Image 1 (spheres, rainbow over the protein chains, first blue to last red):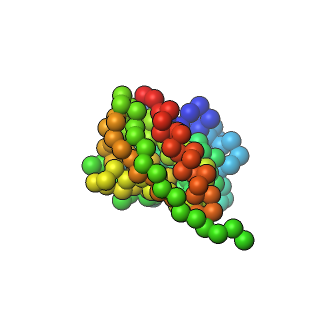
Image 2: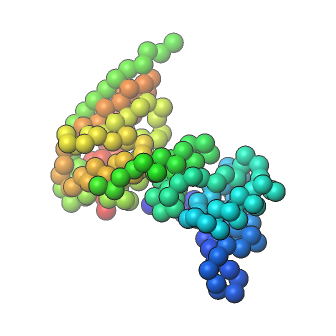
Length: 104
Length: 91
């Protein structure tokens, strides 16, 4: 939908295969997704959000942003917006607008 | 200074193309290329043409008439471009 130019990097789970969120995986995913114009992170809840916030507190800059958005709808909306070469603020906003979007 | 203008047109989705995720993404990307505010309406519902989720929620089936309306400096260009895009949408 968003084409090959938008990089989507998964970062779920622990290295041993367990449930959870691993800081190193999050950092590696941010690095892999970054093409210079910014990175938008979407998480589900719980440790995913806590871990990302922790990573961004220590390494954050305005260039990597955690969106307050549902993960599936937010990711799709953000990816399509990014594929239109829109600015980072617009990409984040499109993900966050997904909070109020009905499916029906 | 350019005057903000308004423009509207009615177009029809190709008969075999429902406005599902992929064609909707193509439609929304086209709308995002313009500064104008663009709305798309099926008659029953209206959506922001730059919001994928809003456009998907229209649930527009192939052959549906869509009313496109735009307001802004590049409204005319936005409507021309979007109506052409709708005509060439594919699955």
